[in-house]
Image (cartoon, rainbow over all chains, first blue to last red; front, side):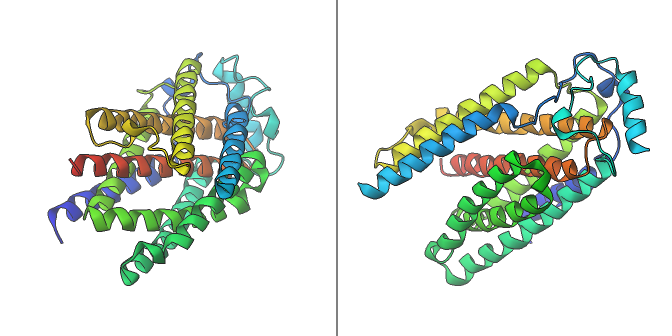
Length: 69
Length: 256
């Protein structure tokens, strides 16, 4: 096993441990009790829905056009 | 009880954005509510499913030794993953079923593309995985401590940049389909190409902060239980994007 594998293997293991351990705790009060928090009133992807439809449509049209050329 | 606690916390926040409008689309949990622990567990499940299917195409590639062997699985995984991602985005309450299918399909694609990169640049996959997960852990740590504070302006900036990158990639893809060279600089290994990749990696990484905030606020406000799957799904979408961009960036650096 080379140094690259060991070094990045350790990073992967540590990162996963940090994610699964810290992830279950609430953020600090400094983070939660702000006045300028994001208002997630709509879906996270709400603003992207229109763009997603446009992109998928363009992709579909391009695929169709490509198959006939 | 969870709902009661969430509403009490909502009252204490003092944030006008966190009124009863927030998460209105999803309602407030009547039975079990979304929790951080639940979302983390579901992210773990999605990651495990992704790795499982990625292992299949990875092994398929190295056994056959030719990209043709994994092409059908990769194309099927990419298109199927896109379809199930769209279904999850538009039908969030189906996320419990569609998000695991999405993870399995994306795993097929990622396993194949990772094997292709690994055959060309040995050791690149573990580097990209380490950098992706290292970014995830670092940003989560900074978010939880309140060092990175996502605001409406922050969201506007990241969403706009993400949309811009998406449109640029789409134009390049469509141009490639019709035989054009596409937008050359975004794929080049020159300084401009590497700078572009660094920018995209930064935007993808900052999307993780938006995911953390979405999950944190969802749990705080007692969103329905299925939003745990949706939160885990949105985290997976960003992680997959970040991983692919890391692979591209490392490949550009190593091909110089």
